Length: 260
Ligand code: ARG
Image (tube, rainbow, N blue to C red):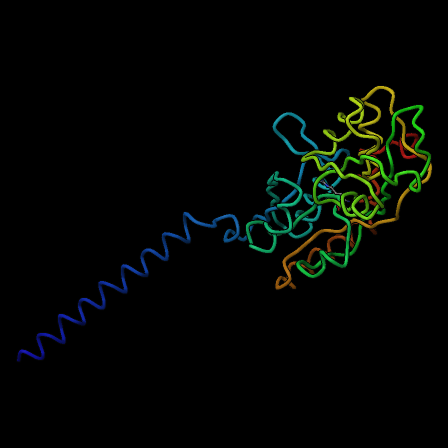
């Protein structure tokens, strides 16, 4: 009799315990990472300091990547929610599952491929050098021993770091590097060609050197174990390329004379 009682007490205790455990698990599912759990929304990580690919317009993040991502979402029947963050937080957000994908004019590199998968590429780009008008820097070779500004964690940062005796100044935003250049705090900025054009147009007395640094390709980053999403995004990208929608989006933000 006593033993029976003990067993039933233990059973009740076990039930209560497991219910509580279940309950708390359910709670965490609801209040926790709901972004990831809700199947009709894809969370995009970006750094909206990179016109014309992503930038702020009022409270919204707009630009080529934002439009392409929304068009991909439409093809997949999903909403896209954009999270703005530091550029070097994008890959960690994707690998940790905080975001479903990263779209940020992100160059495909072998190093990044160790941590994330990339979709097919959707744009080609170059790294260019911005200097003050009248600067003695005329090409990449003249950067030896100079003070070079870059956006932290970008490919511009990686290239500048490889230049002999150069001092690399890393800024959170590309535009801050350009401002530092106008203030003579640095000698040059290495950055992607399209934002370079936008930044130079907004500042006085700067120019982009004709000789580009490198050719690169942009793609969307997805977590390594997310083959299903990668496949669906590639299918959506392919159909958007074929229908001319990607070209249409690019043309909306980059006018033909600006692209020259
Ligand atoms: N293409 C360069 C890279 O991948 C710079 C990208 C910066 N993008 C941004 N949204 N801030 O490193």
